[in-house]
Length: 141
Image (cartoon, rainbow, N blue to C red; front, side):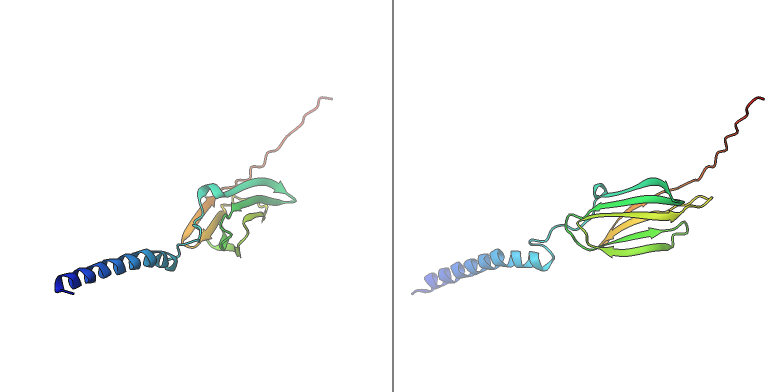
């Protein structure tokens, strides 16, 4: 073989080897970075619902629903008026639903509900004011 043919053969092998590295290296890199078959575990606003249900047995009632499509772990955090954590629990339910009861008080409360998975947080804040009304009935004699 002459040197011109040898140089051409070396270039063809180098190009083929580079192509193989790109083809097989990319999927491996993707899986190493959390890619591949893993679904996106970021919660969206539409997946979280927190609703005020009213007063039952001297308790203010809220319902928290979260469609955790990936089934990954997440935290439910509830903070009080001062921003202090009043409740924190880890869950992994795919169709999460929990009823929360607060002691009924004569004052305003401002609960904050947080669904956190990874670095993502969905926050729902409420202000509950209790208004007491008095009805007076007068009948003539």
